[in-house]
Amino acid sequence: MDSRNMEIIYSENCVKQLKKIKRADGKKAEEILAIIERYSKNSFDRFDLKILKGNLWNFKRLRVGNY
Picture 1: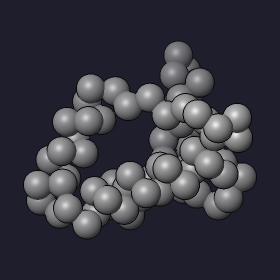
Picture 2: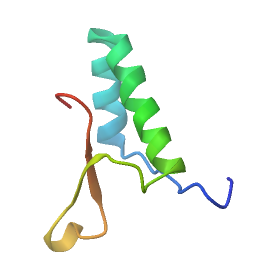
Picture 3: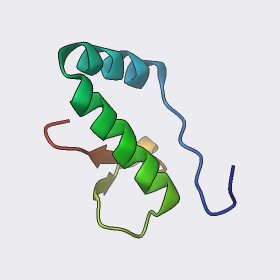
Picture 4: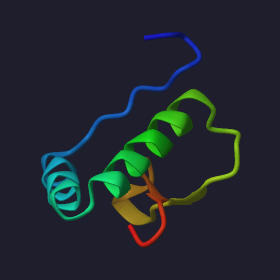
């Protein structure tokens, strides 16, 4: 991993959801993964990003279109 890239860890639930999206709309799944990859390389760019609250404060939600 390049020192400028952050590590993205996908939960089991995330992988399941991406597989469902891929079956329904393969292009949208590719778009989601591309944006996650872009975020991992440059988190200072503009993204629809929200830091979660409570016990999940160290996690972020990245919205891509309707997902």
